[in-house]
Image 1: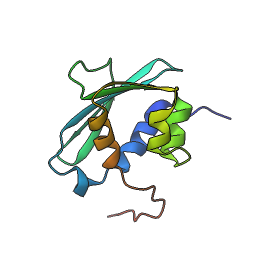
Image 2: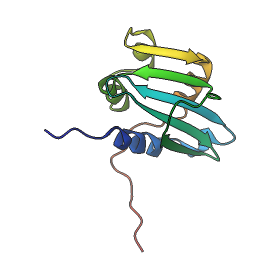
Image 3: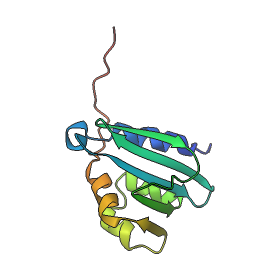
Length: 118
């Protein structure tokens, strides 16, 4: 089975951002995948989540270090945010409240969305 690049998970995460909930929010979150030593900087502004594979942003509201597998489990709903925050497989630096705020901006998985075509 082919490994899915970590950037694909960032794309999936950005689609889940609820624009209405994110209105007026400005957040910067570092996500380090410990098993691959890849860091992504997630920025929420103007009701959109932007992501870039960059070194950790020093001005981040929160930084997490997590395995890619555990992050995927979170995205697909196999692990809840409460489970994530209480596991030894996660390291958090910075504001836990801002991290919780970030996760609260995410909507549920929706595989049944309309695709607009010209």
